[in-house]
Length: 64
Image (cartoon, rainbow, N blue to C red; front, side, top):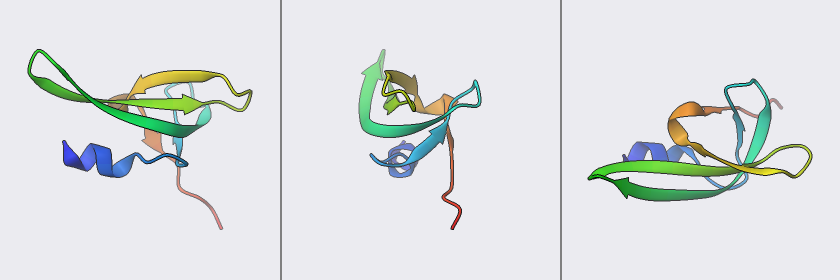
């Protein structure tokens, strides 16, 4: 699971399943019934905060 935590860092942008682009501000590693999971906390353009499992997010690369 180290690969998942290496992908998500605060300040990164991600696309959620609805297609909206959000900013990552916290990443938590948890354990549920012996299985590791990563919960990624994000903020949308309006400042609303939500939590997603890392599995559902797609990284958004910066275009320069």
